Image (cartoon, rainbow, N blue to C red; front, side, top):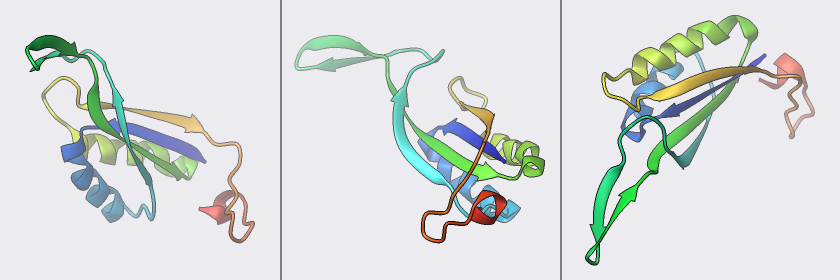
Length: 112
């Protein structure tokens, strides 16, 4: 099993979720996150003070998939989230050693 994690622009989440659902993904975790990368800092003014806002709001998507599906899931996410602008996001894949469904105690692939 693999843990696929993606950092996405918030306005791309619905497209990515729809594409993953069409692919056959049955569940995922979405979290609001902030961070910064190569995109330019925004300059903002508040009460007469000018400051640089380094953080950008994004969504972190996480899902566990069978090993064989991981490359396809990465491609589905990349195509649905693609943008020509800097800061479109990142995707990474990590191995999952074990998985347990809390309610039933099912383990491994049965817990997916």
